[in-house]
Length: 428
Image 1 (cartoon, rainbow, N blue to C red):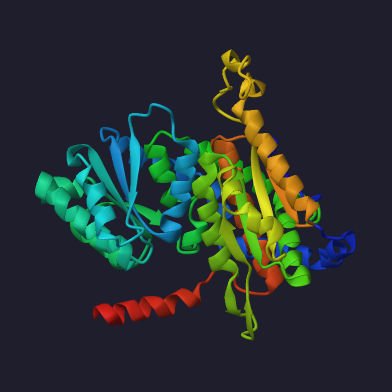
Image 2 (image 1 turned 135 degrees about the horizontal axis):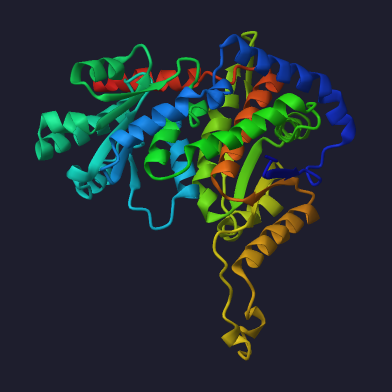
């Protein structure tokens, strides 16, 4: 197959000399990422080639085929990738649906979600690698009690699927105790890089989305990463340009703005991946650096009417990356019957697809007029394969960026202090 992604970086305001000077670091980054993969220290590249993974997911789907709703409980890396891909790929008129909760402890939201469920037709997929995530496990314990009251404890246990650590943790132990169905999260894959494991792929497959096609797309990006030189590879180029914008141009706010409603949630997934991976107090040598770009999730054309004023005329501290879907699923146009209307006649017959493409191009032009850098990722269409490519594109770009910044892109020590204080406040 050929890639469904192209990256246009002509307007990123970076000179060829800077890119040329960065080439040795890009090559070193590529080698380090492949070394981490080959040694088994990081598993997020190899997992998409694991022939066991689709079989594990297929089996779980077969054994739960009679149910129509999957309540997905997770937060952060255990939640955002599945949300993003479901929003992008949800089959039309599907008899099966995903319902997401556990990403917040807002009691009103959770109560509303749970009250809407028919427990006889619902499975719970609780996702937590450690099994100690307070937000997720609180929601799970509440949902489980409601399910048990409705169905009885024995039947409820048959409708619970835990996606958690292969070998350890509180949720893994609970699986053994209660005989819950278990799906493994590899030990060498962190949460925000786990979307292409059972964490993201089981819920999607349950909902009728082609998990194998998603993996195929991810494999294409890995093939390109391995076979192309670092200056030719699009993911490496994206990482390099954002890095140079941050380090050379003081542009520390990096916006992702897809022009497709179905990619709204994807921008939030990017936000977590970029922020948690690249925002670090110390570098790999243990030196204080307090480094990292600030990712912003935006949506075209919606945010042309809320954020573009700031991006074009506010502080010159941003980059904008657009995503354009070349071919949408539906072909809608303004009715030709309005052609004679004095006000709206000029819109007659214009396709919405053409309007949204023109809106992106116009926004790009407006930024360029103010010397504000932008780039565009083009997708031929939005499908399972291109979505797999898009996920892996950004995972690779994130890993490359981590090496360029000289930090560990796979940990999140800044999150731990808040977690410990939360437990102290709650006395747990």
